Image (cartoon, rainbow, N blue to C red; front, top):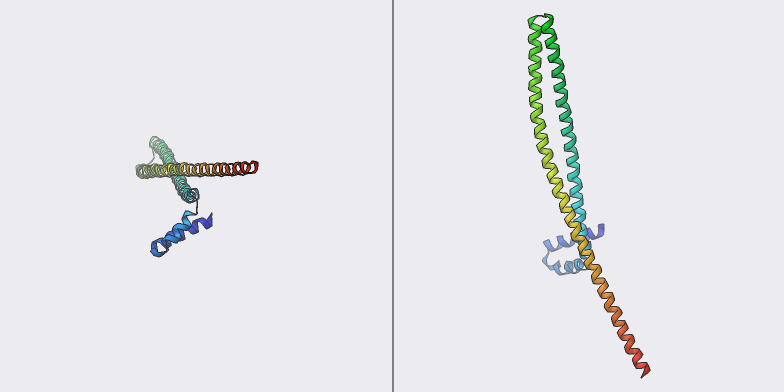
Length: 181
């Protein structure tokens, strides 16, 4: 498999850099079956799909982490809001209430920022999902093309074997006919 890739790449490079080697490389490439050449493309598509899937997984992980952070911020805000109301009813000094209120406002700003980042992460996640789906469909398409090439080669081999058997039977029939004459 690796040798086929090397041969294919070396032939392509030779064709690109030296026109005089074009016929030799063409002969070498024509000796490689179409299904074998397509297998190289299938392997590349599978690798691209695998990378796209890994990127999608990393993006999902980041999105979930950001979502957890947002939930934690909401939880902290509720806790501090509850403490603020308890302090307000207990008759604590105004300075402490103002400090609590300022901290709650900072939490509100953090929540807003986290929501924006979460939305950006969601947009990125959707884009990575679309890219993976496109890569997946390309891989499936290449598998179908590869399978069709394999079937075509098998059909060609069956026809050639049938022809050889027919020719052999025809020669055997002529030889038998000569012996009886």
